[in-house]
Structure formats: structure tokens, C-alpha cells
Image 1 (tube, rainbow, N blue to C red):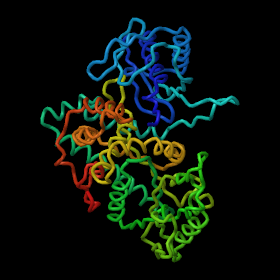
Image 2: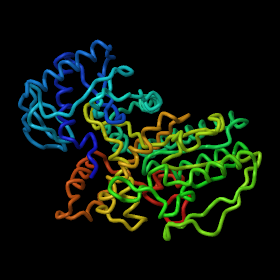
Image 3: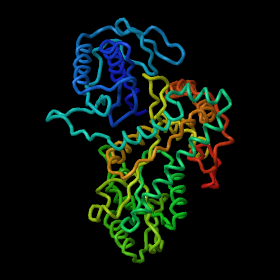
Image 4: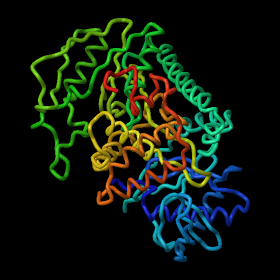
Length: 464
């Protein structure tokens, strides 16, 4: 499995140090680990903002703590947490850490918003890699946070209380209404620019709910008199023998160069001009383009809709005016924390989504899903995340009640992972995470919900 930040002992050790240092420097304050950014995590104090000077001092103290090589004592595992003694403090965390403070990854603290990003990006000898501040990502999280504040929700126990008090339908209705409003707002933004915009480009990591989002966005656009016409980038794959290979000699289907860029770019230019185009049809079984084509032409009230991992890559359509494009980034940016110091990693949410869908509808047991996840994550890192700030708008596809609904499905799937499986530790980790979520009945989940893409029953497919 891919080594995510929350699964790296050295990085979890840094987290313990951060919690200790901030408790020492700011008595009475609590460090909140808010959300992941690139190879790092955005952190802030729960009750106040941090100045650049204070962030710098936190970094200095954290490095001193590491250099001192202090003992970190695991006291016990209880209630889903690892309980560590760090100095005089007892700290509870979801994921394990090392037993010495010196065993950490290189880090740097970057002042950002009201707190800081602790960044673990590897630093090359020639200097620090340029860091693009994730302003749009932060704005998307902040928008979700404001919605949650309006509902007096911040932590998973808050949602559990809603369900326990018999208000699950109200919770579900509000969450779905918020997403529908967001999709409607995005459609309105496109309509306002329809004179210039001719192509909608959508990208996001695996299990973000792109299929359902596209269908719902298309509905909203059609309500406003604009008909989206889908164009699949998959049909522009080069024949298998022309596909580039990675450093291990395997076909690199995630490479931009695996696409017939010249043909695809010419077709999109012609379509934007209203010309008739014969687009290719790719056969994944044979690994070759078929002899058949698909006739396409964009009318004055139609707009091209393109989805794919490379959709936000400026290299996809480099010689066309940026004004022709409206770019959307979608991801499941789960906002609720277990508690202030322990976030729910967004990658865990997407992995659970993917596992449930694979098991229920694609014939893949969890062991297969887990074995593929490393490759999926590498492709996302290479082709998706680095271009997320290229978008015009971000859409958060996560639903605040989704892990409560997914729990029963996920636990049933995870029971298929045996003790002798190489992925048994992954099963145990996910079972532990799910244990924090009170199960919620799924029958009231709307049939057009993004969640239906994973649990079944969606109106957008005959298969589930």
C-alpha cells in the first residue's frame, strides 16, 4: 500500500512533537490538524490565529525537540487510539508513531492562512522545491467549514449525535441540498461565461464521484438551455505498441504522452469552431483504436464536456485560448475530524468508497482494491494533484454523513480480508476508523446522490 502521510511513522512522530510543542508554547490552546495539502498538512490553533513569527518559533522548538532525541512511550491502545506519553503530556492519536523524537522526516513549516502547513516534500540538494500555496483548496475547505459551523457541526461525534437523536433525515437533506446548490452555482458560473466558454474540463482523483457530478452538472446546464456533449479522452489513447513505458518497463497509461495529443488537439479545435469531426473509438481489450468512428459537431447551444486525469494539465491543450475553457477540480475533501487533533484522511474516505464499489459492482474483492491503490495514488500524484490549482472552481464531493452510511457496507466488504492476507493491517486500520462512526440507514439517500455511485441504486446507471 502507498505510504500516505498518516501511515508514515516518521511523520506521525512529527505530529506528536507538534502537539507537544504547541501545548508548551500556548497553554490552554489545542492544535487542530485540519486537512492535507500536497505532501503536508494544514494545522492551526483551535481558538486563535498564529503570526508568522509564532510559526517560525514553533518550527524552531519542534526541531529542538527532535534533536534532543526524547523517548516517546506507547502506553496503550484503547478506544481506537494509540496513547503516547510525550514528555509530561499524554497524547491520543489514530495512527502509530516512533519511540524516539529523532526519528522523523525532514519538514518545514510554511505560514498559511490562520496557521501553517507542515510540509514533508523532499528537498533536493540544489534547494527547496517551489511550493504553490493551495489558495483554491483552502477556500474550498473554508466554504465547507462555514456550512458546518452554521449547522453547529465540527467533529464526528456531532454527526453521531444527530443520528442518535433521530435527526438523520434532516442531516441527510441538508448535506444533499448543500451539494445541489453548489452544483447549481457552478452551472450558473458557466452560463454567465457561455459566450466565451466552449469546453468544460473536469479532473479529480479516484472515487471522487466524477460520474455523478458530471450528470448532475449536465442537468443543471440543460435547465439553463445549454447542452453538454461529452468527449472521452480514453478514446484518444495511442495503440498499445506506441504507449510509453515507465522506468520499470511497464506501460505508462497515466502519462500524458499515452494520448494521441496531436489528433485530440486538432479535433477539439475543430469542434470549437463548429466543424464536423470523426472522433476515434478505442478498444481496451485489443489495446487498439477500432476502424469505427463517432461523428461529432457542436451546435451554438452545446458545450464540450471532457473528463480525465489530464483535464487540468496545461499541456493537454497548450495552443488554445484559456478563455475557451472552464476547469473544474473535484475531490472528496472530508472535513470532519474525529477530534481536534485527529483528522479523517481524505485518502481513507476515497479508499473506502472505491473498496465498496469494487466489491459490490466490479467483482473485485478488497484485496485486489488494496493491491491496486499504490498505483492509483502514484498516478494521482503525478497527473492530478499538481494541477488542482489550475481550476476555475473546486467541488467538494464529500458528504458529512457518508462514512456513517458506508460503515455497514465497508465492514461487510472488509470481512473478506483474511488474517493471512498481506492487506490485513489495512483492514484493521479501516475497521478502526469506521468504528468512530455511528451506522446510518441508507434507504433515504437520494437516488441522484454522489454516494449512490458507491453503494448502488443510482439513477445514472442500470448496473447499480
